[in-house]
Image 1: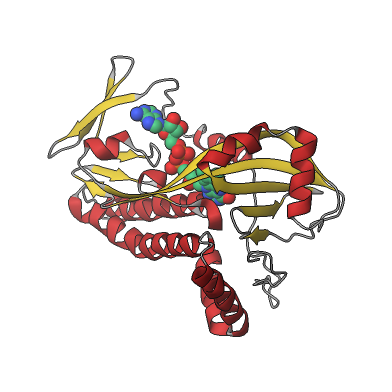
Image 2: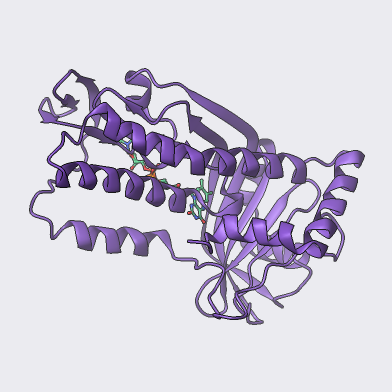
Length: 310
Ligand SMILES: Cc1cc2nc3c(=O)[nH]c(=O)nc-3n(C[C@H](O)[C@H](O)[C@H](O)COP(=O)(O)OP(=O)(O)OC[C@H]3O[C@@H](n4cnc5c(N)ncnc54)[C@H](O)[C@@H]3O)c2cc1C
C-alpha cells in the first residue's frame, strides 16, 4: 500500500500448487531447531560468552585468538559476526554501508479479526508499517520511522500505542493489542566488497546485511552458507584442499550474483518508497499500477522474493 491511497499491489500464493509465498517463523524457534541439529554433531564445539579478539591466516590455515586467552586453529575460518563484522575488517575486506537514518520498531500484536494469512506492507508517508501474520490472531508488527521519532514510539503508553497502530492500519483487523515488548533496531544495510580473503570467508550478515523490508536477510544468509558448504563438500569429495582460493572464489562468485541485485534492488525500493517528495510520490503510484497490470513485472518480483524458480 502506498501513502494514503487504498490502492495496493498484491501478490497471491500459487494458484496451481497452493504453495504459500513464504512463512513467518519466530527467530527463537529457528535458533532452537538449529541448536538441536548442531548439538548432535560430535565435531562441533560450542564456546559461549567468549569473543574472537583477533585472527590471522597464512598459506596453510588460520588462527583465532579468543578473549579467554586461548586460541583455535583451522584450515579455513568462516565468520558470521554480524553486519559490523570485526573479523571482516581485520582481514582487510571493505564494505558498502547505507545508514538509512531510520529505526525499525518490532513487536507483536493480538487482533480481533483473523489475518487470513495475509502480510501487509504499508508505505505510509513519513513512516512504514508492516503487519505480518503469525499463528492465530497474532501479527508481527514492524514500524519504520526516522531515528529521532523512535524513542517516543517505543515509550508510548501501551493502550495509546495499540490504538495508534489500529487506526494507521485502517481497522482492518478490528481491535489491536500490544503483546510483550517493543524492540528498536537502527537500520544500516551493508554489502561486503568481497566475501573471501586468504583462508577466510564471511557468511550471513557479515557478507550482506539487508534492509528488513522484504524480510530476506536471514534467508540470504542461509543461502550463502549453503553455497559455501556445497563448494567445500565438492572439494572434499575430490580430495582437494577445501580452504584453497579456487574453492572460496566459486562461493564468492555464485553468492555475489544473488546478493548484488537483491541488495541494490531492495535499497532502491526503500529509497523510493520512503521518499515523500511530490515527484517520488507520483512515481510510487505509477510503479504500483504498472506492476499490478503488467504480469511479467509482477512475476519477476515474485520469483525474486520467493525463489519459485528454485
Ligand atoms: C528489524 C529487523 C527485522 C528483520 N526481519 C527479518 C525477517 O523477517 N526475515 C529474515 O530473513 N531476516 C530478517 N532480518 C535479518 C536477520 O535478522 C539477519 O539477517 C540475521 O540475524 C543475520 O544472522 P547472522 O548470524 O549473520 O548475524 P547476527 O544475527 O547479527 O549474529 C552475529 C553474532 O555474532 C556475534 N559476534 C559478533 N562479533 C563477535 C566476536 N568478535 N566474537 C564472537 N562473537 C561475535 C554477535 O554477538 C552475534 O551473536 C531482520 C533484521 C532486522 C534488524
